[in-house]
Structures are given as structure tokens and as C-alpha cells.
Length: 96
Image 1 (tube, rainbow, N blue to C red):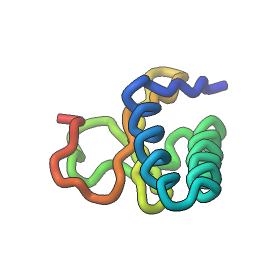
Image 2 (image 1 turned 135 degrees about the vertical axis):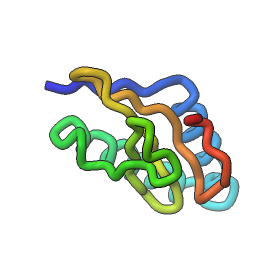
Image 3 (image 1 turned 90 degrees about the horizontal axis):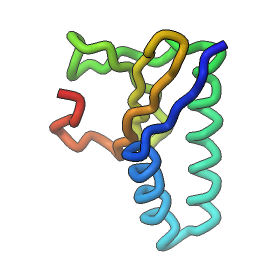
């Protein structure tokens, strides 16, 4: 079975996004983080279900979308490595 691994930068990204949401709606921030974790947990059963990242088709990264964020990951053998979380389309991606 696949193992899910969150990197520190990915957790920091999600934490910053949740902090921003919590400024106006603390309950919504909690619900959003729960949604993200639930979506990511599904990758354990379906690791290739995320779409290839269109900006970097030559790399092995995939993404799932939990609006308004994109969660980027890559497969390393049996492991699913959550690399980072990005709100919206911020242009330049840290993958390259």
C-alpha cells in the first residue's frame, strides 16, 4: 500500500492558506484543511488519479485541485510525496 508523505514546505503552504482564510472565517479554514486532507488521502487508493501538471509536462509531478488551491505531488516508488500547495495560479512554479 502507498504511503503518504507531506513535505514541510507543503504543510507550511497549507498552514499559510488556512491562516489567511481564518482571518475572516475561522470555521471555513478548518473545513478547508479537512477537505484538502480528505482529497489527498484518496491518493493512497488512486495514486495516479491526479492530473499531470500542464506547465511542466516533462516532469513527473501531478496535481489535485481543491479550489482555490492546487496540491502538487509526485510518486516515488510506493510513496506519494506531497510537494507543495499553491493558491490559484501564481505564475512561476517552484517545480522547475
